Image (cartoon, rainbow over all chains, first blue to last red; front, side):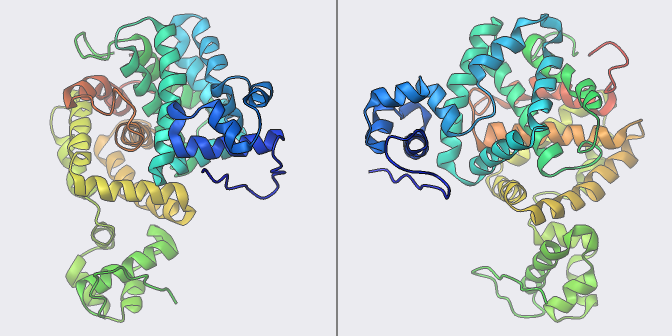
Length: 204
Length: 204
């Protein structure tokens, strides 16, 4: 049996949307993203699985809603990849900075990073979601060799940027203008996604 | 009055090396790196400041010893910057991976990242040390424009790499060979340290 660990302010009544979200958080934390099922969430919330589908749609959408993720990779990634391929690094950095600059999104993302570094189960849950929903989609959309490695390299730079700029807040990066950060970091993301990452051709 | 928060296994007796290190951890946590003084550490450990100097040397060396940092930026940074400038990115990535691949070093660095994301005081302490000892030294040694920004960009990539490879352990980055990571990430560090970060010349 999974305890839901309800937070203050949650209605918590079985069958409410928030009651199901709380049950989902507990199931994802217990089993990780890959092993969690709509059926297990429904059992934990003591509702019919159809009600979970009705409120949230897919397991991915349930995860996003329950974790209050500020964006859905299924929506964002195709949009970022849709424009001119040679400016993809710039679009990724701009999207990332705009998201972290929204206080409520920053709050959620910081909470996720905090959980990931302090709790192995939370790290595993996040890993499962990232692998399937972010890396998996990116690999499909990009169509270049080494797409999985490229996706994780992008992740390493954007997470590190969040750490330095928004969490430890090291200057001058913490107060740098958006345009300064875009100019500095976009070429990194551009190379990770579309350039040479194997060192086989001249660096750039 | 600052409590020392002694850990199991520490002798804790005033005047011992470990007693002073414990007092130092408490003073750094309380005041941050910049505001902490050898005098305050000595007072908290109830010893003469000369004894603190005798055991640890400078405040920077005391911090490194008390936090069990796996390397001293005052030693490592000049060594990394000493070789051919065009391979500095590669040397930085190799040093970074070799350090994280040592279990006891990884343990300490993960502890510091954990503290920084969960505790604003720990983040401030780390920030103070990074600004003075890592960024300050790098700026002096590099002698290029925008050296502070460059140093923080390097920090963002190496911390994010640690997060993705060693903490969340996202594949294939987590299991990638050292040479694969060096080939992928060294050009990023190289550009941050010696290349164009302002977007004013063609990307590369």
